[in-house]
Image (cartoon, rainbow, N blue to C red; front, side, top):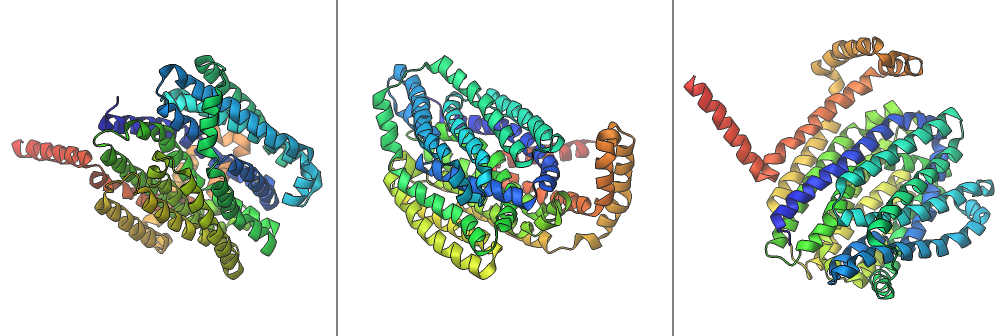
Length: 530
């Protein structure tokens, strides 16, 4: 049985490996964003956003939790010979349920297209989105096997291969062939066909194809109480898109969608890797001595990293949007900043609701989600009516904080966590102070900005002009850098100052402080002896 301290170290190691693939994915995605934004424009992003509304409704019927249910019941299963059957049963069950949900909807694709995007001729996109949704959920269920076995390198390799394939298809279909939204959805469909085939093949090879009715019943018993709360959460989360479309316009949904493209980076490079590596391990150690302290320590690490990444993003998001997107998206930076906070709160909720999942109190989770959703809809309507599209982001942030507090309150009744409140307070105060300083500081008037923009950037442009990149797409990269040197300079400088938040690491991780002090003492001793 792994010990809490060694498990924590292993979790951080696997989280770093998972993050590597996610970071590479998002960096390449950000480089391609201006090309996608100029091709799809606001209407294209609005269509993508509204189809997501429909797909997220289907996910809510599955309680968002098949992969988590497989992981939870795998650790509950006492018979080692039956553990692989938990995975195979989960994969077969999710494949059956998603097919039962999506096949009838495919038959009504035209009415669905009219309802979601007011254009029945886009029914082909609805069909492709439904098939992609089916494949993705089956792939996630099968991928639980790699998470259970902590095969982080293989998982990340598959993620990178998926990224390369998706990027190649998007470039070919959207940019070269000019297929627009059709190219976007065809690319997603092909990528998920390959991805799901790989995950299912690996799970079937190791776990077989056994379907155990008792295990299936236990999975249903765990997930069914979550369905009402998940439906309510869907209503609460998607209300802002629907209300924005009804009270403002379809194009406003496109602006929301663009604003949400950036904060999701926090989920992809921080929250999801932590979930992939930590979700299974925290159940492994939960009943051991010292486990509450280890789980609390991991929460501190997560908070620090998530706030660090979110701070950098919130500080640079305005010049990034000005650099990468058409003018119609530029004001989305205000929404994105608030959404950064919401995304961090959602990540914290994953950790602080542990006691409810540990106790399998899914009925209470459902009630909490339902209550929060009702308030969220009313709040979204009021905020959007009062502040327009920005009100959507404000309502999500407010309810994120309320939901986090409620989950933690009830979770503590089942599994008490000795949180490191002093360290968490330092992290929060330092982040708020740094954010307020950097967003209100006109760095363009400083001598440092003048030196970088007037001296360093021309040198960089000259170096690129002499490299192989000068011939790529007729030197577009070099020209873009020359035409937008000021926002690039602002991104570099403000991002650098925000990254300085990392100097809090010795406070968050005491062993680092010990190593730094020891290194400083050695340097002083060498100087004195010299």
